[in-house]
Image (cartoon, rainbow, N blue to C red):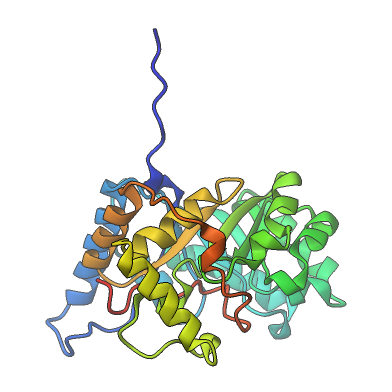
Length: 298
């Protein structure tokens, strides 16, 4: 008899590495690189199999120096804005592979749905399809907010992957039917802003997107505290329960944060009425970046 083995819930995660300087201030040469190497190894050992990057800063270069060998990770790369020109978008996508030290990557995402909705959207998509046909990227997609109408855009361009923001406090991607629509088209979904920009964790002031809703946010935190449920565990459990088994993007700055997320994702799912925690749509956020994860939670 063959036993079916359930996949690890960590396989649903994608790590967005935060490569900011060490919080403790000046450190010994190579300390940041060593911390990043340990972070990635911790993720790999824990069953995480995806990393998402962005083309600004030195994140790609640092990752190339820190991959475990052999690397188990699928990489998602973002384009630069179309305002820089089609040639620049294509060249920078190729350059991302060079900076990451990869011959090819899993996914290339247009960093804003507006780039595809504009007059050069078709030409941009054709450029990216050419990169895919050459074997540089296995899948193509785009980043969108709910108000961009990602399902309609997906019908037009037929992407492999779409990234949208969705979390316990803003469930609009689910309640609007956009997640269901994307699933119905056979599109793989990446979910950003899983931790609502750290708003669930308290401590520091609430992010600007929740300005004017501090009392409602305080009630959510208090309800979780009274139920003795860790906010990180609740946020990940909500994401894991979303239809279509999307990949959840978590921004991580240290090995300790990675360990905390792995522990939370493996914890038993709390018995909660998810809809009761929905505060409605946030103000527009940088879905391409995901959300800063933990701040005071690690």
